[in-house]
Image (cartoon, rainbow, N blue to C red):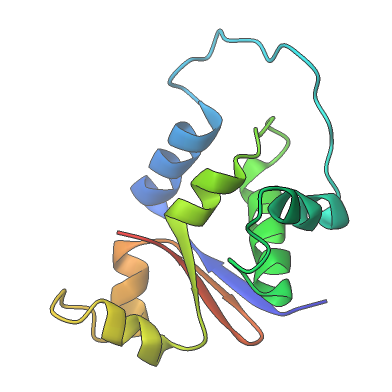
Length: 130
């Protein structure tokens, strides 16, 4: 199993959960239709099916899947591969993030965590773009 670290706290975590899982924003909405539970293999396969296999590395997809499982916490989640590809980017190290976000005041990993979701894993990190 890969080693990863998710850092999302306080209002940022609440906002993200409310946005992605409709918690508190629509409490009376029932999940209707067919629901399929995806394992890690099916999650990865969905990226292949949407021609997004090269968007994330094997390790990054594992970390993203585990993070989504953790944050969903039993709440139904509708997988949207395209949205995930638009919202998140994989970097091999913080230096790449620093270069991509130069001029934004992001100087350290802690600064980055203050601005966005950071998912660390063996081989890199994934951030929610901002």
